[in-house]
Image (cartoon, rainbow, N blue to C red; front, side):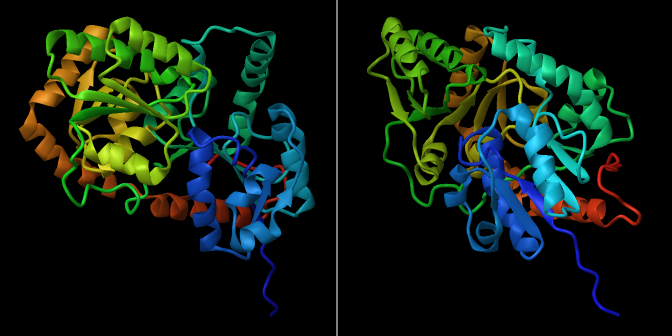
Length: 381
C-alpha cells in the first residue's frame, strides 16, 4: 500500500523577530528544535521579521504573511493560511486561539487576567484588547487542545476561564544548558548582584533599585548592582531613580547584552535578582540556576514551581523585605556554594529538547487522530 501523506504541522511564529523576551524568546528556542524532529512535516507561518531567525527546511518552506493586528492574525490570517496549507494541526502561543480552522494546540503563556489585575487600562486600544480577549479566550480554550508551562498557570485558567478540570497539559519550558552554565574560571569583577530588566513594568526594576539603595544605606561595602537589558523609554526614569538614591557609583546599566555575555553576568553574580509579582514560567530564574547562581526572588507561584529543589532566597514585594533578602544572599557564602550544585542540578531537569519532544508528540496525536476534520480540535487530556 502507498504511504499515506501526512498533513503538515504549522508553527505560528507571528511574534518571532519582534522581541527577544517572553513568547518571542520561547519560540526562538522551540521552532528549530520542533522542526528538527520532523523537518519534512513542519511549516512556519510568519512575518518577514522572523525569516532571518529561521534556517534549513523551515526557512525554505515558510509562508510569509503581512504584519496585521493581533486579533486579525489570531482569528483570520493564521487559520486561513493553515487551512490553505492543508495543516493537520497548528502550534500557537497566541493569547486567544483561532475559533475555526485546523486543530489547534494552544500554548497559553500565562493567564492575562492575572496580569490585568495589577495593570490599569491606560488607552482605549488596550481596553478594546482586553474586552476582545475576555469574550474569546474561554471559547478558544474549549475549542483547542491546551498546554501551559506550569501547573500554576493551568490552575489560573481553570479558575478564571472555566477550563475543564480534565483539560490541559503542563509542558515545562527549558534552558539551553550549553549556553547557560557555571563559570569555567573565577571572575575578577567586583562582587555584584545582577538584575535583567526590560520595558515591562512587571520586572519591577524600580523595586530592585529601591531595595538595593536600602542595603547600601546599611552597608557601605555591599556588592555593586549590575542591570542589563533594553529598557526602552524606562532607561531615563531608572537613571533618575539611581541618581536620586545617590548610588550612581554603585549601579551599572549595561543595556542590551547578547546571550553569551548574559550567561557570564549570571554566572559571576553573588545572586540573580528577580522581582516580578507573577510569571507564566520564570525563564530568567531558570537561566540563572543553570549558571549555578543563587536566586533572590519575590514570591510568585510559577517561579516557586520552576525553582523547586533549588536554592532561592524569597522576599515579599516590598523594599525592606527585598533588601533583607539581598543582604542574606550576600552574607551567606555556604548557601551560594550549595546553589552552585543544587541550582544547576535543578536546571538540568528542564531542557528545550525535552519540551520540544513533548510538544511534537501532542501535535502528532492531534493531527493524526482518526476521523479528525478541520475545526474539530478537542482539549488535550
